[in-house]
Each structure stands twice: as C-alpha cells, then as structure tokens.
Length: 540
Ligand SMILES: Cc1cc2nc3c(=O)[nH]c(=O)nc-3n(C[C@H](O)[C@H](O)[C@H](O)COP(=O)(O)OP(=O)(O)OC[C@H]3O[C@@H](n4cnc5c(N)ncnc54)[C@H](O)[C@@H]3O)c2cc1C
Image (cartoon, rainbow, N blue to C red; front, side, top):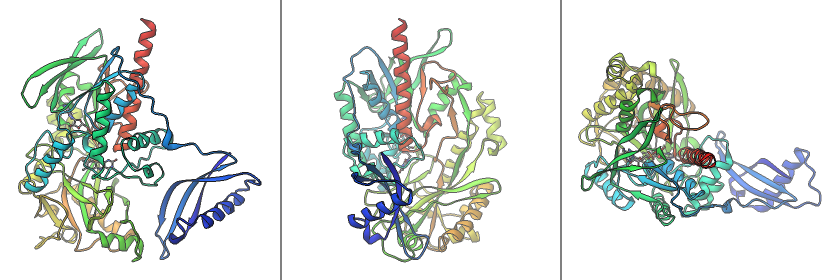
C-alpha cells in the first residue's frame, strides 16, 4: 500500500535520513497505519517553507510505499513512433502547447507540421539581446514569438494548479528527457530557468524532425483555408515565408491553433472568418513591481539566511475585483515583451539559480468584459465581432504605455510615489533593460486600475510588512497575464464550436495559462485529434 503524508523538519535536518525516517514512522503511527515487518520507502514529493513564525520550518511531503516498490517517475514510458505518412496535422505555433501536441501525435505516428513566425532559438537569442541592449524590437522574434514560444526565455516555472498529477508528471518527464534537471519531478515549485530552456527546446525540435515532423521557422500563418462541407471546415492554412516573402498553401487532416495570447492578428483573422467563434473573457492588467531581493528575503524569512530567494503570492479584493500577484520571479529580471514597435509590455523571468539582486512580480487587477469602456465595445461591434473589445482595449493600454515611455524605455515610478501621487525625482536601480523613464503612472493608468492597485498595495503591506518601500519600483504595463478572448471549443471533441477540424489550443485559446497547463492542453487536443482520426479510419 501507499500513503501520502507531510512531516515538519528543521532546515538543518533536510537531508538527515535518520530524522526523516523516524518522523515518517511517527506520522504513520498517528494515522493508525500498521507497518510491522514491511519495508518503508519514502519518495519525496515536495517541500514548502513555513516562514510564518520567527523559526523557519520545512514542510516535507512524501509518498510512502509500505511493502511495495516505488513507481519510477523518471521512466514514464514515452512511446513515440516515426511519422508513417497516413495523416498530417498542421500546428501553428511552437510554444509548449504546439510542441507537446506534436509529441502526442507521434504516439500514433501522425506527422506534425509546425508553422512558427519567429526564429529558431539561437537566432532568437540574438534578437532578444538586441531588444534588451539596444531597445530594437523584431516584431516576429522576441520574448513572445519564436522557437519554443513565450516560455523559452522565461523563468520556466512549471507549477500548475492542475490536480491531475499523472498528466503534469508526463510533461515534466518530457522536459527531463530533453535535459531538464530531474528534480523538477519532485520539487514543490519546479522551475527550469531561462539559461536552460533554449537548449531543451532546441533538442525537442531536433527530435520532432528526426521523427519525421516538419518545423517551418520564420513562417507566418496569414489565413485559414476553409470550405463549407456543409459545415464550415478548415482544410489548411496560407503561410508566408518572412525571409523571402513567398506565399503558399498547406493542407492537412486537422489544424491546431496554438498561437499564444500575443497573436492579435490571429484573433482578427478568426473574427473575419467566423465572428461567433470568439467570446470575450476576463483577464487582468497592471504593473511589475520590483524590489531589491534582500528586502523580500528579509520579510519572508524574518531576517534569517536561506539558500533560495524568497517567493510570495499576494491576493486581495478591491471593489469587487481581484487584485493579485502573478508570475513572481524571485532573484529575477523584468523584461520587455512587446510584439509591435508601438507598444510597451513588461513581464518577468529568472535564471535557474534565481540569483539576481532583485525580485519582481506582476501586480494585476481583474478586468471583466463588462469593465471594458464603451468606445472599445462600440468599435468591436462596428467591426462585426463584439468579443474583440477587450483586445482593442488591451492594445490601447499598451500603446498608451509606449507614449509614456521612450522607445522601449518603460515608464516607471517609485511604489511610494505611486501611492502618494507625486513625481519620482529619482528611480531605484532596476533589472529592466533597455531601461526606465520616470513617469506619473498614477496619472495616466486607467483610473479604476490605478485606484485598485493603490488599495491592493496598501493591503499587501499589511500581509508583508515592508512591501511598500521607497526602494520598490513599478514598471508599466503588465497586460499579457492571459488572453482577453477565448476561441470557443466543444467540451468533448475540443474542436472549435464554429469551424470544424480547427483545434484552438493553449494559452491563446483561453483554455490554459502558463507553460505546464499549455503543454497539457497540447497533449489533450492532440489526443482528441487521434481519437477523431481513428474513428474516421474505422468508418471508412
Ligand atoms: C517573459 C515571460 C515569462 C514567463 N514566465 C513563465 C513561467 O515562469 N512559468 C509559466 O508557466 N509561464 C510563464 N510565462 C507564460 C508562458 O510562457 C505561456 O503561458 C506559454 O508559453 C503559453 O504557451 P502556448 O504554447 O499556448 O503559446 P506561446 O508560448 O505563446 O506560443 C505561441 C507561438 O505561436 C507563434 N505564433 C503566433 N502567431 C503566429 C502566426 N500567425 N503564425 C505562426 N506562428 C505564430 C508565436 O511566435 C509563438 O512562438 C511567461 C511568459 C513570458 C513572456
């Protein structure tokens, strides 16, 4: 039999097997579990730090195998077969959703053809370097677009709230197969780090090609090819080679749309084909807050030295809307994530060591479809697709941020000045490259967002005393925590509700958020396609 349990340890006993063994026996006895004469094998599941009191404790969770051998998570079978040429599926976007969909298709020998507008990882790394050092943005290859999608140059936090552990272990297992540290299989908050991810993505892509798949970089999907049969059905895609400008049409058994939440043009493309394929959804916008890492560590660890940078998660309600921290990057960097030259968008990332001198997080305010101002709703209606109103508003906020910045220099204000509504005469040193420019965020951010952020920060200062400090900087704007539009799909078949054989997938579809859940969504959608194709095979 097996049993999951938690024990509390002092930090110095973290690797003391004798203490761990005796604590586990005590915990089993407290649960009245009889273990006499049987072997006991504890498998570590996760560690969390209890820093609520002055003495920090570790809460360690184990799965204990009683008289049994543990399963081997590192050896979850990966049964990929070479593409046999019977079926082809086009996947637009090489983010986690697209890549994991491709690997799932190989379980049945189905050929994936991946269309990716951005550069492969090496060239993309150069584009990103140009962006951070010179402020020059390539609209097709940047922090959001390119090989491996938005997650490649990110923190690579893999934590997901999904409770289907089997599914997420398989995602981790595939990352490990391509070079991630096996500790991601057991950490409470696994992360890979931006220094490791590009190599992992590169190896994944090589494997896809080795198994008979295709990856077309620098290739933009410009339209869907549809037909009425009699229902509206996608047959293929129109693509444009961004290097030489040539255009062509590609056809397949199904099309997976895994283009992420920054692909504004894709939503507009769908709206033109079938406006009812889209629906408005709640999203969130706000700012990045960055502190010197030592301040956050001191608050969270009560002044004690710990090996890791401290994390936090903050949430409150202000006037009936959630205000919360998102994508917290301990020991990380704030990065520029715009995808067009007239926007400023910020996000965060860390390397695997999480060892920069700063810690940052998005602090965002929930934005529901009914919160979108009238002018954007009217414009979307006029354009024939009311669901696009939130997207229009998001873009307007990103453009407004740009106008308050200077090129890719982002507008910024000290947190205390934002609360006191005054100019920042100087700004703290920040991790954000290309750089920041002092700006009155309190004046130009939409008023309801500004008010809720101010109330939120005051509330956070109660739960984390010292969070509001002169040394913290706010950098605008954080707008891409999730998509404002959903591409609706059938609950069972996962096909678009309006366009047959089109499979909206990953974060851009509105059905996932983050690397882990988008990768799982990729697997789920590919499994639905496998099922559909096998059913059709039987009825042919
Ligand atoms: C800086 C940063 C840090 C992040 N940190 C984390 C983190 O630590 N943990 C976490 O879980 N999540 C993080 N995220 C979010 C995470 O990256 C996304 O949730 C995830 O990548 C979504 O996966 P996806 O496959 O659905 O889409 P994406 O990863 O967005 O991939 C979509 C791909 O589609 C391509 N594409 C778009 N339009 C077209 C088109 N018309 N034709 C061809 N190709 C197209 C894009 O170039 C892109 O490569 C971070 C994001 C950023 C930007």
